[in-house]
Length: 511
Ligand code: UTP
Ligand code: MN
Image (cartoon, rainbow, N blue to C red; front, top):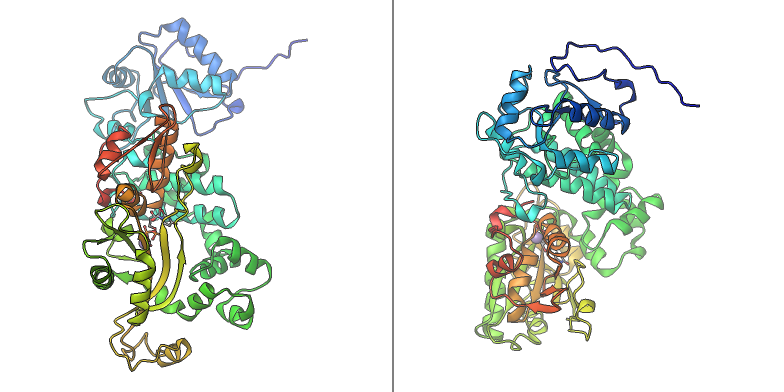
């Protein structure tokens, strides 16, 4: 027997005669409210699509409803839609910096077949030339961070911090998928050239899911999100944050320590036996290593390493990468790439550099990893998208300004001698994390691109290469999986060209 569901009466005056009652009670997607543009679609097709949408759980309202978030049209230009909406009583469409998304029917049909609102992509958006410049700009926010320009200074600090906190918490919980989703949302918000003031302004943005939207809304409306504040206050989050700041400690180790009931750095000192040598060094220099490294300090380290390289392999170069190359005034470490114009000359260089630096008293700690990168018979085996690279690489802790040989290098003395370092200048040296990477010249551009970051930008470059271009990118090479060939590049620009991307300079890769 067919179940008869009573249809609710209309609440509002609707200027379009064909719009049936709105069974809002049954809508599944409460923050998506559709409006179908009758112009060119025709009354009967509109009625059919309206009932289809409602059957699928969507809320459909008239043009005059202020709740409308998605305007769907067939065969009209963006400007025609704006005009039609205004004629039919819309007050939100065309308002600068806000208003519903203006979409082509393709978004509607894809959403119907998905059974839920699909993410809005630029191809769904209708371009508008009049009145809605901001709306149009918004539609142009590209889906991948490597297609967007993200300067260091952005306009939505509170929103980004909130989303990044939830992303970090997801990482602490071992949920990589949630971490990625929130990191991507934060990254989109970072790229916006305006300050978001209302949740309606983010409706047409890519990569912002239901949960991120809710957090953004809370921050916009209440100045803070209860969920984010709870995370920040939680003992687990605070402890994890504390532990992962130790050099040599990752999320896994921090999580294990937390499970074991450890909470403070002193707790760790009591359990000294559990620490490996990197972590011991990390603990010893905890304060220094968590004091931001200034650009001027990074430049001194570049000079020191360049001096070493000049003596050991004339012609070899040292390049500052990482956050400093993206224009950051400070960072948590110094990332250096070393190469030589003649391929092969760089072999064995790293260990010599380390020896020299150590003999000169520049190293408080170092750990070297051999190059394991090689071309296998099946190239796809050698081209992984893993973030861990296979260059000759050294994680080190530098002793910056180690000019006074009278300062004992015995670490415990040093820490003792520097007890008052925070308040005075009792100590004239500082421990600084330095990553040294040696690359063959033919891989230099890939290494430069890979080590410049940001992490989000790199991740998106790799994802874009794989899913949009059928290519595998890492810090060594670019491989076309269909053509089954490696693509060489003598500059970062050439890599962007291979990928069909506009070149994004380092200062705009702060995704
Ligand atoms: P960092 O972790 O040093 O980040 O890695 P950063 O952007 O310089 O930030 P701060 O200023 O130090 O805090 C630099 C880049 O090197 C890549 C990462 O993708 C990141 O973008 N990287 C890092 C690798 O490719 N492999 C690694 O093993 C580590
Ligand atoms: Mn860095």
